[in-house]
Length: 115
Image (cartoon, rainbow, N blue to C red; front, side, top):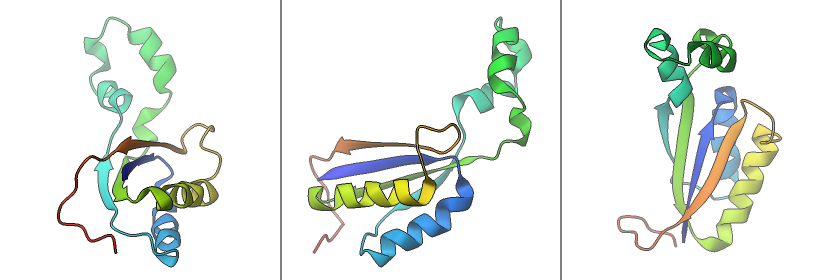
């Protein structure tokens, strides 16, 4: 069993992603509103000695929306399918401002029925 974690920057794709998973019988995701470290630091940029470097990295962060962090525990045999759906809905994850996706092993789970 594994946990799939996705930080979705393309929040406009959230509904399509959840729909696509449901169509394939993949459910149980939890979705949280989230913000990245750089976006939070941008609000207090004057406090940091590397202001110039941060400004170049930030660009116009005030216009950027919050992300969504999605996580779910999945049986190993469903993981590749779930990840393939993310790539098909969101697009090329190597492109900026799309998503970050990773998995973690799950050693134990309670309160979820996978059958």
